[in-house]
Length: 351
Ligand code: NAD
Image 1: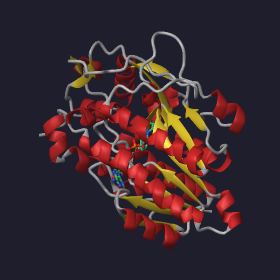
Image 2 (image 1 turned 135 degrees about the horizontal axis):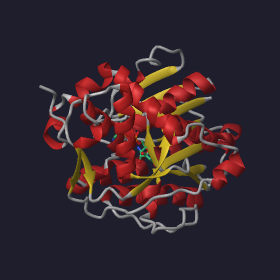
Image 3 (image 1 turned 90 degrees about the horizontal axis):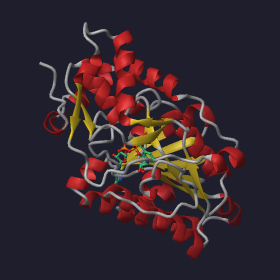
């Protein structure tokens, strides 16, 4: 099976490429623009494997996408390329509209043109997976879970742009009969996660004795999933999901942000003792505008229909993740030392 992966140099995309090559035995074409979030170092362990190719390209570039489809002749697409950081979407929404909406539209059109030209048996088995987030559903109160029937109600420019992309993908299935499947996943964590996101930010700041910023009172709740469990779910949805259907993906791991930060501190106290407890560094900062209170996913459809289940608990996954950051400074050091990190995230390089 030949799979075209967009955004494969990003956090989840690199885990997807690794899963497809090492567990599934698929051929992979990784198409990525290499924005600040794209990092070929995340693919160092697989980039020499037979069946793997990387092409630097922008999903908004229709001629480039047409050429890649014609050349690679994929059996399926896993579309992950996106601008993905909520805080950046608040200060600069244009890139989110461009990549997440215009880029998804451009990719859908290139894929549809390619699909229409396939011989009938290959046309029948082709699939396009649009990878999205639970943030499209907006915020939950104290009770309830997001199901596939929850109406969209996005709060941030990021989630609004992802919602728009999901609607385009669904419409391409209904209007053109284009074989789209959709996924909406909760917050991921794990190795190769860019240091601007909560879990790696806390690990690396704690290691450097820097403040651990927590929005508001830290009471916002997220539902966490280890990235490899997501990668496995995405392959299942691509190959066995029903056309036109969406599948929620989540690990039933609801945690308050403050509890996540405290848990990381406790693990670091064991694995990398600093003399004083790491949680002394916790610093509450002004809340993010439009900050959703709670996300929680009901993944029953994926579990019952496709037999998926998360393998990591939050406890095992977070400990694995902390260990990975402790052992892989070669990967995060250049990112941490970058100008962006120093300016915006209180991640100034250690003296
Ligand atoms: P990421 O920011 O780590 O990676 C995104 C990748 O897309 C980068 O490699 C970047 O270079 C590439 N990219 C950006 N614009 C591009 C363009 N115009 N053309 C080609 N490539 C481009 O993001 P991630 O966390 O790995 O998320 C991947 C996907 O999964 C996104 O669609 C995101 O919305 C979705 N998602 C993420 C999470 C999460 O917790 N991280 C949860 C659910 C869904």
